[in-house]
Amino acid sequence: MSKINIAIDGLSGCGKSSTAKAVAKSLYYKFIDTGAMYRAVTLYFIQHKIDLSNHEEVVEALSNIQIDFEFNQESQKNETILNQQNVEQEIRKMYVSEMVSPVSAIKEVRVAMVAQQQEMGRHKGVVMDGRDIGSVVFPDAELKVFMTASTAVRAKRRQEELAEKGETVALDDIIENLESRDHQDSTRAESPLIKVEDAIEIDTSDLRFDDQVQKVLNLAESRIEKVE
Image (cartoon, rainbow, N blue to C red; front, top):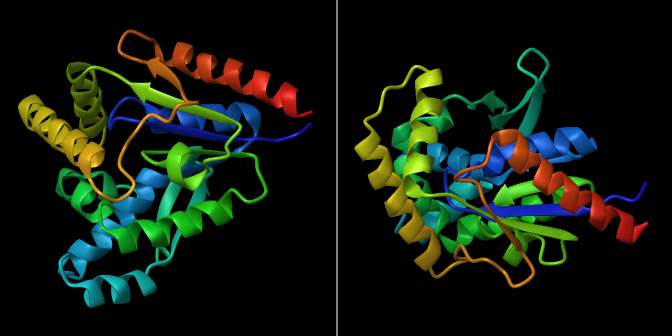
């Protein structure tokens, strides 16, 4: 059976990653969480007190960053590895979330991460989610999906996700963070969040998780049939 690349873009907290993981699992494809990659870079910058306005510091820091993914048999999930250290839990915390957009907007950061992402998808059979996958990373992806959801729904989902990890955050703070990230992501000069012309939009506000996964799977299967 022929394989394709699937690009899933969209707003923060609309279910991109969880949907992409489920789709990849169903198709036996490789899932790449690009958001986790940028979170890992952000964590490294925070830990090493990198001045985001200092070009030399940023470039040097990036040369010391290696990001991989490791499948955890117990949790049955991919976990993010930063320089051989598992940082999956740490990169999901709010202090990292608050810095992800400014870090992601830096040209050198995006160039470094896009290069790694494109290499991962060179042999097809990849499901990748983010904000510029269909526009920059995989402009030739056979299937491009753009996911949206209302701010209220996204905030509630994020709050529940954080609560499951033992972190209590006020809903208003999460809404403020999401709105700030939406603005920064869509207006940044470098690889802004956009819906490309050939992407199919899916609003997940009123969809059950299984339904949104099935929508993407149906689209994927129709694309796979076309390339066989």
